[in-house]
Image 1 (cartoon, helix red, strand yellow):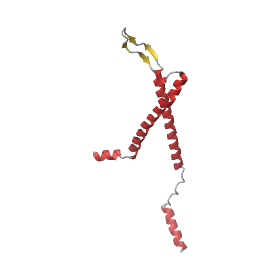
Image 2 (spheres, one colour):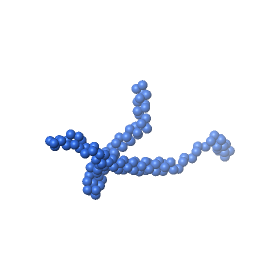
Image 3 (cartoon, one colour):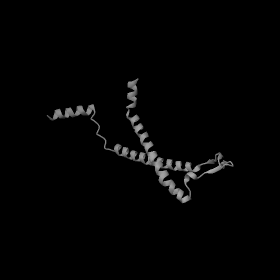
Image 4 (cartoon, one colour):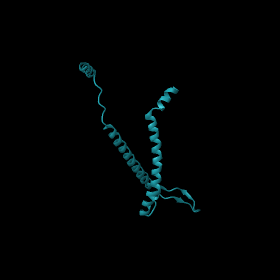
Length: 135
């Protein structure tokens, strides 16, 4: 069973998949930092407030006479949804470009000149006969 697992784990496609998964996770973190650190502050500057503050308040928070909050605010925070959606679109677009580039490279490799087919048995036999008749 251990040999079977080792054979399964060492297959090229599984290793490629694992590398792709790790690279995708790392790229998602980089994209998240780009969106949250550069894009969203610019959008917030244009709109006048941070995108994470965009929300629809369904029920205000309840504050008692002492100034303590007794019930939390209930709100739909659509700003964070917009932020994650923009991040997804950027990641999807970059992955599209990567796949397109890989397909272009594979296509160039496939268009390489084909090797000439090896002669058939009949052709080899006829070549031998020809060579013998020349002598």
